[in-house]
Amino acid sequence: MAIKIFIDQGHNPTGRHNAGAQSNGLFEQNITYSVGIYLSQMLEKDSRFQVQVSRTSPDVALGVNNETSLAKRVLMANAWPADCFLSIHVNASENTSANGTECYVFSKNSNGYPIAERILDTIVLEMGTKRNGVLINPSFYVLRNTSMPAVLIELAYITNSSDSIKLRDEQYQFARAIFHGIEEFYSRT
Ligand SMILES: [Zn+2]
Image (cartoon, rainbow, N blue to C red; front, side, top):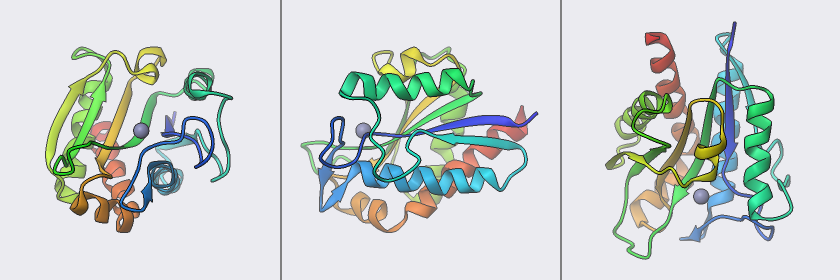
């Protein structure tokens, strides 16, 4: 039985509800879209995995407002049902020196925690970003309402000059790093 991975590319296209952060000439929603598609292509080529993405084309906007945009992503994953839910985001801060990668899970005891650790390890190792850790955030809608292990990944900071260059130029490499983290996790279990 293939492991079913649901990839949620955070946010909706520019100009629509639930669009993401923008800084340094970059748009979060475009980065998350591309990284998600690259990752889905890597998983599709591997017979151990099946994959679904939340945004199947660059102009797909989910839901009709912020709330339903998030609800739609969770519904898709729960209905499949996926074995693992990964929501891809990039971080933003008013403090432009803030940088690095973090992964969020619902709780310390959630089944997503060890998956988040592997993905954080491979991103930090392969992308050279700062390790901000696996953090707990039970208030994130997609972590609270998914019925399978779920991880929200903040790849790096769009508001930081060196992180933003990586987010602009190394989207394939970010996807590959996540793929390696998934591979490592599922080859040990
Ligand atoms: Zn986001």
